[in-house]
Image (cartoon, rainbow, N blue to C red; front, side):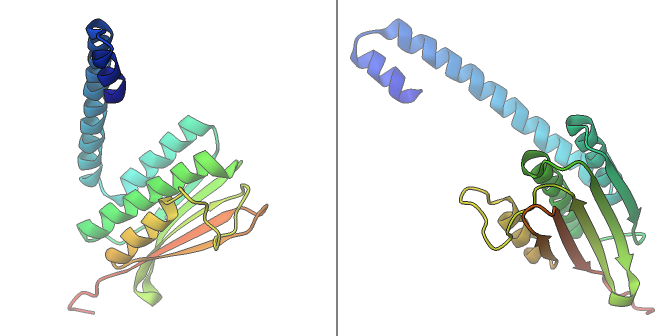
Length: 181
């Protein structure tokens, strides 16, 4: 847009330049408003906890796509805030990826404590197109970013997928041991 304004100013068409500037300013205000709303939503969701937000995200996913999403959640009483935030972002990213790419007809979201392993696990499964997890297309950095965020928060991501056979993401975080254990 700035290049167009510059060209119109160089061509002595200040009214056209002004029109572009006004439209661009309006778009910038709208984008800023959307960004603020998204940040407020993230802050609000952070105070709800993983179970509530995961159920809300699944509900949004169902409403937006019409794809059924079975949700089963059984979590420990509390999780560290950094783990909760990262887990919420991972669930949101996974559901967004399914909506955009999978062409699934069914989705399952399971979050459970694995007491024997002293971990909790998030499993997101779809019956969509699947893909080769060893070949991620250029420009599709969602799974790579998710893997890195999980690693930084002490978690890990395993991707199980095959073209034509859907996808299963398994996310695990260690549970902190309590002094009385």
